[in-house]
Image 1 (cartoon, rainbow, N blue to C red):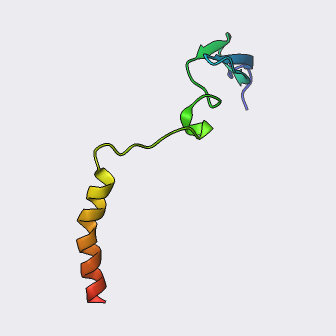
Image 2 (image 1 turned 180 degrees about the vertical axis):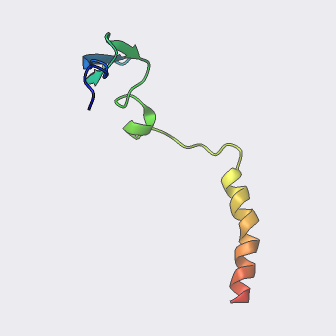
Length: 75
């Protein structure tokens, strides 16, 4: 392994807009802030709601009911 070619890494802190601070190791020399993190993101907190406003799930089921019925009759 060659020496003196790898960037220096040091511990920095990443601050979220919600106030959560995460310590990590990075080659960046300064700490930085982010708008959203795993502590406040709806996907990770379980508060995400899936809304099917266009009825896509119902259309998909309706479209493939005929296909599944035809396959069931063949067997």
